[in-house]
Image (cartoon, rainbow, N blue to C red):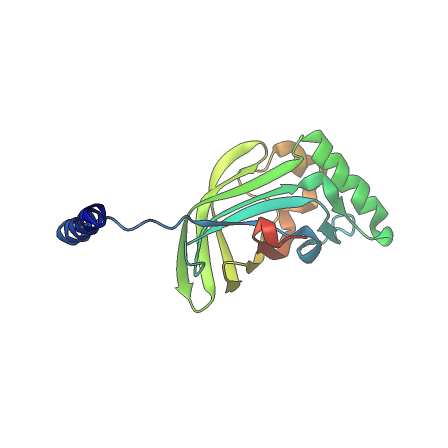
Length: 202
């Protein structure tokens, strides 16, 4: 009986001590989700005055992860890697496919990556990811606009639409020399990326 009383007294003292001191709450870990390849797609196209540059295809190989807040309500980080030489064009664009693969091989730009450093909500489901990307084997700062379709601890989906000139000040001169019409061409990329917790992918 004396031992039981002593244990109860110790428990009471412990409860009182916890009430007197601020005990930091346990911080929940961020949620990491992996890209689900079969449910994701990246399409691209080029509009050009030169028929040889006009193309419309898709990328076959790409990976990525996103990090969400502990409650799964918002994305805090995006990391995507695209295998450029996995670009596939339809059979009626065989010449464009040969040209595209030759450019990729010549400039040894087989992989492109984007890693965010900050994500900002613009309005509604529109967001902007600021970070760095690799292009022509150099790392540069970049801004990636995207739409957040849904975000939850189990699955998240983002959609990306980008348009712009095919060449800029960073484009190698060899490319513009090989395809003079490239400077008058524009390109676009449209991606639907589904992410899920690793234990939900099966």
